[in-house]
Length: 326
Image 1: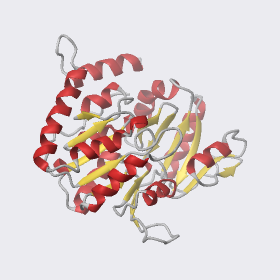
Image 2 (image 1 turned 135 degrees about the vertical axis):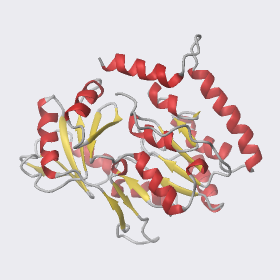
Image 3 (image 1 turned 180 degrees about the vertical axis):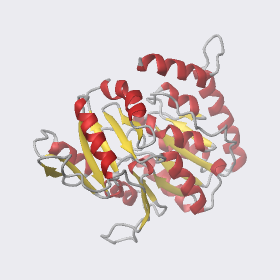
Image 4 (image 1 turned 120 degrees about the vertical axis):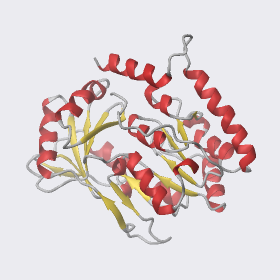
């Protein structure tokens, strides 16, 4: 993977932080799919102070909704890397929230992606709105259903079944294959689909222009919060644009070097409830206290990236990622 060439210039930070955008998998939760008690308290404390908290994920919204309800969130929820955004439904409602944004892939492009992925040794799945569709002989269908919290739709021919635009295609492969194929996928589908990685096993395809970066700009406008006063936390390539767009981007320590290089801070691990730590340090204190803490955390993150020759971190990460991608 390469760092996108269209990242925004350095965004100044502002206090108080009034919007927090959280990735889910690898950031808010670990492999156990459980939100820690300290994280729940921190998020609820931020909400009680009028801070908007939004989940920004590659999952479909219905899969992410259980975590939003657990945290008692009210800000819109972003799914499919920004390809779909919904309002949070009223408490007690069993309906999905009102659709605010939907940017699907063209059907013909989706079919081309499915064939390309299959030809390159990946197993592609189709996501559309709140549906996820697998080939009927997929041996991991039950695992995916458990992860998503919903039943997969099984079809005999996933290409033939794709007759309408779809929200996202997720192509599964054993690491490092998805990362190795990312550059060629971007070249093959330039202008017709955007490509990202949300997990070492997942190469994802969305409509052109779709990203978590675009989604955070939408949330910023809708909620009336400057990007400078927004904090975003994430752990993977698909979080890179979002972290670069805001004044307070925090990467998880497991994030690729390129992702950590565009973030202002590095959060503690999921096991240590890093999301809670960042909210407790930068969102809940008085602005003067939070500002001093932010300066210290940003300095620690910079020093962790600096090699002995002090080459710029972003340029180093570009070179390292380019070399790794072959």
